[in-house]
Amino acid sequence: MPELLRSREAEGTCAEANSKQQTANSKQQTANSKQQTANSKQQTANSKQQTANSKQQMKIFCIGRNYSDHAKELGNAVPENPVVFSKPDTALVKNGEPFYLPDFSNDVHHEVELVIKISKMGKKIQEKFARNYFNEIGLGIDFTARDMQQQLKEKGLPWELAKAFDGSAPIGEFMDVSNVDLGNINFSLQKNGTVVQTGNTAQMIFSFEQIVSFISQYFTLKVGDLIYTGTPAGVGKVSVGDKLEGFIEETKMLTCEVR
Ligand code: ZN
Image 1 (spheres, protein in one colour):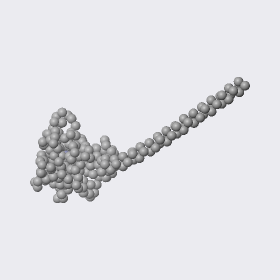
Image 2 (tube, helix red, strand yellow; image 1 turned 30 degrees about the vertical axis):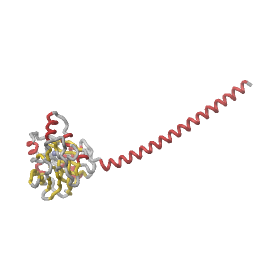
Image 3 (cartoon, protein in one colour; image 1 turned 180 degrees about the vertical axis):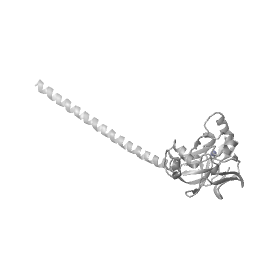
Image 4 (cartoon, helix red, strand yellow; image 1 turned 90 degrees about the horizontal axis):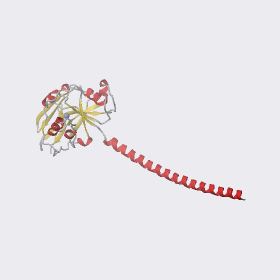
């Protein structure tokens, strides 16, 4: 008898243990199910974020000191490699909207520049193939808080605050340059009807192809990325009320009022 009792007790204990285990499994399944729902929601959120990112995220690169006459006017040495910096997309001013002078500078300069629009994704692009990665150029202004930039340069600090602030990169129309000689493009900037800057791509220290190749050694270039390719001599201060108009050859590509 004691033998049987022990056996039944053991069975009973065993059944109880199984039941507890089943409850535990069931709870675990519920937890797993909740986790899957959470994961699914996270995936949906990630997917939405990626869609948003693909629409909004683009890079803006700028080349400094790419025209020797401008490098000289600011007392800078002619560089051995392209001087590269970038601006966030919040710097862009599109559709002829005005540029608002920032309150942290008393010496904001216009720098008119030809701008490449990347048409094909690429990295580590060889110079001889670089021409395949853009087919449009436009005109933009690399607004620069010169007083602030001078202070940053003296301290050996990055230029971002002086170069990449909100509204610092007005951009105009683009034109197809598939059949254009990129080594001989004239462009100019008028301030209140007077020509203040003129340039020709023959004066560039680094060509469009060299710039695209150089930047792509460090950054993957994506469709829609913009590259401001440097300004010729004649940069100068802008004031409230100034009207800037940019031309490629005789065609007006950019209008920007200063407020
Ligand atoms: Zn510039």
